[in-house]
Structures are given as structure tokens and as C-alpha cells.
Amino acid sequence: MGLRSGNILVVDDTKENLRILVDALGHEGYVVRPALSGQIALEAARKEPPDLILLDVIMPGMNGYQVCAALKADTHLQDVPVIFISALDEVTDKVKGFSAGGVDYISKPFQTEELLARVETHLILRNLTKRIEDKNARLQEVNEALQRALDEIKTLRGIIPICAHCKKIRDDKGYWEQIETYIHQHSDAEFSHSICRECAKVHYPDFDIYDE
Image (tube, rainbow, N blue to C red; front, side, top):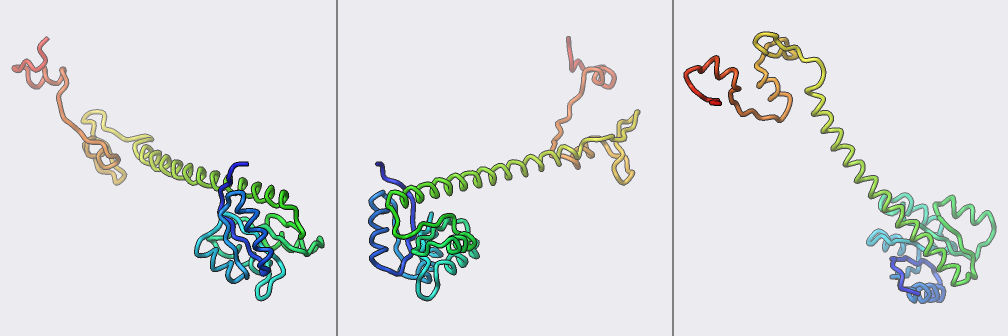
């Protein structure tokens, strides 16, 4: 089996339980960080957010449910998946764990193969979720840029009052402006003046600007 990737925070107040979890996960290639209490776990998570947390329920000070609630109240940690591992095996205990924000609940004593399978599953789901969130964020940026471009285009759309003779345009305040002035005020367009063949013949008949 190939080495797996992921930073896992393991929380249990019993050193032997921590050793078993650290050995099993470390053997698979995960980076494992042990914590002997809920408070230590919170400090470690805030210092370096893990990819997943394995959390015991019965601990002195802060129990697992309280630790999970604190994690979910932190905007930087609320999306980190939490798997409870506990000797408490009643349905009410599991429901309480899910209500606190846990994504899974494993009963002690656990099978190592089952633990590893659930850890892998939730890490895959977390990675997929992050990819979707990143793509949605990039899509939102593209949509905003597109909307800005459309807003700029709309400034020159609609019915524009233009004089049939001199070709001046009436602006929103009722003033008549040269077409160059109007377009310059409503877009980023720049002008380079020249003269067409017909106008050259009328206004500059002595100059062969457009010799055929």
C-alpha cells in the first residue's frame, strides 16, 4: 500500500491509546500530531490547522463534544472534519457527537482497518470539497470580471440622440457634444483623426490625397 498524505491531529488523554493511533496512522504515511487534552488540541489546531481530527470523548477538563463545538465556532477550523473515537457506544452518544459537528463516530475497541478506511474516506471528501470551493471562488471572480465588462459595454447601448445634420450627440444633461467627446466620456476608446476620400475631394480639391 502506498504512503498516504494528510496532517492528522489525534486527541486522547490516555497515552497508550495515542501510541496505538500514532503508530497505525504513521505507518500509512500520515503526519500525526498527538494531543493529551482538549485544550492542547485546540491550541495545536489554531497554530497549524490539521486536515482531520480524531477526537476522544471522555477527557478531563474539556470533553470531546466541547472541543468539537469550540472547533466549529472557529471560522479557521470549522471545516476540518472531526471523527469521534469513544468507548461510549449508545445511540444517544453518537447522536450527540454528530450534533456537536462530528462527521463520523468510531466505537472502542476499534478495528485498525476500519479506522484507516474511514480516515481515508473523510480526507478524500475534504480534498474534493476544497477543490470545489476553490473552483467556485475562481468562477465567482470570472463572473465579476464579466459583469464589469458588460456594465462598461452597456454604457454605449440604447438609443443615442444624434443630430441628423452636424452629427453631434445630446448627453444626459441635454447638451450637444461632438461624437468624439461623448464616446470618450462613456468608454476607454481613443481617437486618431483622418479624412475619408469623399471629404478630401470636397474640402481639399487641390490636393491629390487619394490619387487613383
